Amino acid sequence: MSRLGSHRARPTLNLQGAFIRRTDLSGADLRDADLSGVDATGARFRDSDFAGARLADMILGGADLTGARNLTVDQIAEAIIDDQTRLPAYIDRHELIRRRKIAAEGEA
Image (cartoon, rainbow, N blue to C red; front, side):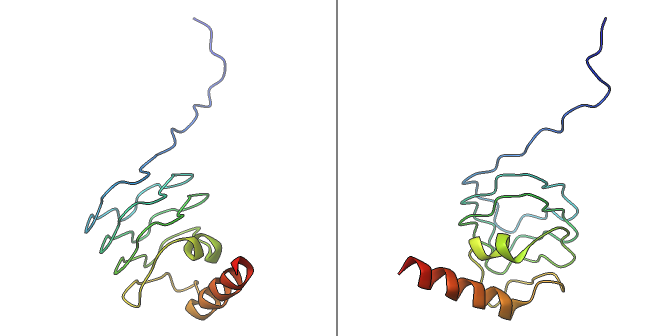
């Protein structure tokens, strides 16, 4: 049996539009996942890896993203958060608000 290579492609997770409220996904590998439109209100994503994940219109109200890795301000700017959303320490909430205002002005 021939092998085309020893490297196996990692499957990409697609949860687009899923309802995962109050789910504990701490430590999850969410690299390149499509989380667009997911309702993750109150969910836990402590220490999860978000490299390359798509968060457009993802509802993260009250979600816990403490210690999340590879999460960018640009990714979070596409999601829906509230004052109860716990962001990783390296995400500046004020910078996030500034970027959202700039984006909204560009759409007007």
